[in-house]
Image (tube, rainbow over all chains, first blue to last red; front, side):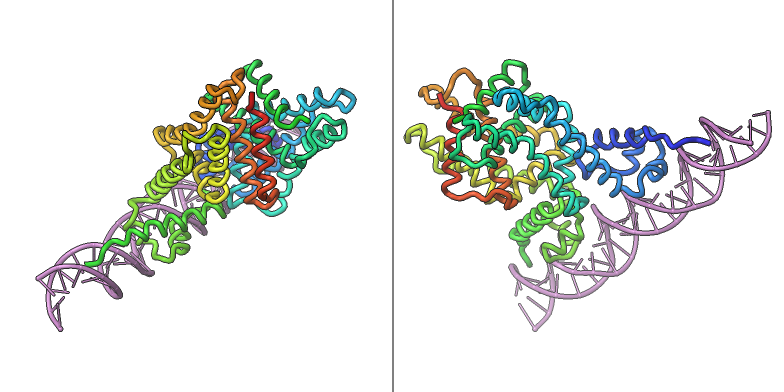
Length: 191
Length: 191
DNA sequence: TTCTAAAATGAACAAATATTCATTAAAATT
DNA sequence: AATTTTAATGAATATTTGTTCATTTTAGAA
């Protein structure tokens, strides 16, 4: 008896991501996907009931994984500034090293495939930074005349742009630039 | 003889935008598009050779139009701070009042339809703000230890997030909030 | 080695979608 | 009013793409 190769589902996911990154969600067809993953089209249907479920499973998986990365290495006992930088860097690194995923998540978000409750999951990704901002206000590091959400947007928007430009090669980041970038974010929200 | 109704091309564009906004580029089919525009599928082919050219023409048109809006009302003779605010507000307003278009431009940018030289056009949209930043440095309003592109990204990213959240209803903007937002942008880049 | 059950295949089929074209309707010209 | 020219139509056709399934291959069990 032959065992179902669980690794193959990941292979399909990987191929799907690569395709979407290069051609957008509209460019994904089952035959192209199969070719990229190095298998027959029929094989895709052994692992996923349909194209729709394939994409949904991919979305769910990536959402789960990326959320987990944001708070990695953060410790409430460390001083505020250090903690904030940690989370800030986590977001930036995530968007750079998992750029394909980020692009897919956004594309899926605006595709005919998305369902109502999946939309909510996206919101939950904000939690880590919001938490940070609240702490920063309590400890009097962050300006209090502006609400959490706006401060969050100021940081996130910048990070997103930085990462996208870095990945596309238009504005490549290095240690020094990242340091400056964090400084700018800091100037924007500090007390 | 009946004259080709040039207005009909705009009607098609409008319907296309609405469809893309609701279902993403992947959700656009010629029959849906025709239905939305209130005409027969064949009629689409009187105005556009193919689906591909239809989408390309739409992209080109919107790109042209939006670029023109960014510098509107800007006058080099007015003081720097006022000029910057003007352009900043132009970007924000553009992304809010023409949100469908912005979303489409980004989706098209990452679709199988995009060509190499169309990619370059997108870059040209940055010019207005870059110009502002250079002037700001010359007149000693803006910090000089950070390059233009990064300062640009800090502003643009924030504006983009603000507009998107406003349109989606998650974080609705009003006069006061917009004022604060500009202030935050200013804190980030000022000397 | 032989047997068995599941995985993998890919051509065949079904469904969706882009495009064409013979025909009709409408406007301009005579 | 008759004629001509072009726009508009939408059913028919062509093409692309998702899905199925009879058959083959493969890996472990007997």
